[in-house]
Length: 98
Image (cartoon, rainbow, N blue to C red; front, side, top):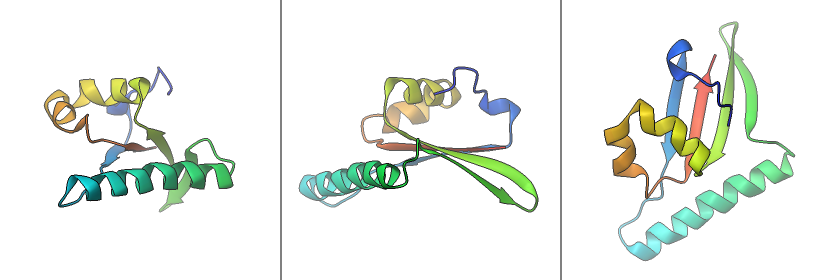
């Protein structure tokens, strides 16, 4: 993850993907599908997790990160209370920025 990334200086959005379910087994099944689905998709596309796209003539970038120390270090300072509520369940972080 880019150490110079500064979310406050850009038009941006941070999304997290979390597994869900009524039982622990269901949550684990969704977590596995989420993790392996993203990893396999990126491998098939030979992508690093970064995609450029445009909307209304503005260029944006989408970065996908699996949960890691570096991706968590971006989220934690931005919304510490929220981050600590979801950090154990978070599997995928999506950053969209200009």
